Length: 114
Length: 114
Image (tube, rainbow over all chains, first blue to last red):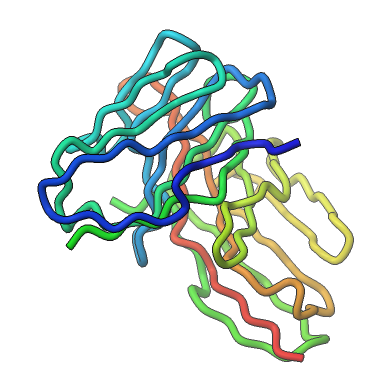
């Protein structure tokens, strides 16, 4: 039972390059999320998908796009990476939308933009 | 604006000591979750508290939700090196716009020395 799987685990990009972070969950959860974690800032929500076919902006969506490919998969794309996007990115899922539903996190993608 | 304040931010103690972590806010929360995150991994849910005054126990961990649902505490008895990690609280609250959000605190980094 893998839970939430994120790929890649590590990535180094040059400013202006693009990349897609992949996330898949095998728990049949309806809702999926992308967070970033920065020192001294805590976890901040980038985008979320309450259910298959819907996506919404979170607290810090600028510079990112998302795709809910199907119920299992939710990807995060950086079209033109900037050093300010250096962070650890976590994908999470929950059984239902809403902040009262506990989150199941993946192990993160550590991204460095030079 | 930081809605959730966690204290202390860092704590280094010896094995066998007790400790308490606090999570405070001026906002009322509909629920509050506690997570533990180990280095290189994603946060893992420990507990969710919903009712004001609620106390939950998980082995040596005791969680309390304040009567007014504005604060919470986590008490660890006889800490062990395996308790080392980042402890995060996350509160669900209603915004002025009528939507419900989940906000994470910055976390408390605990090191338990053998």
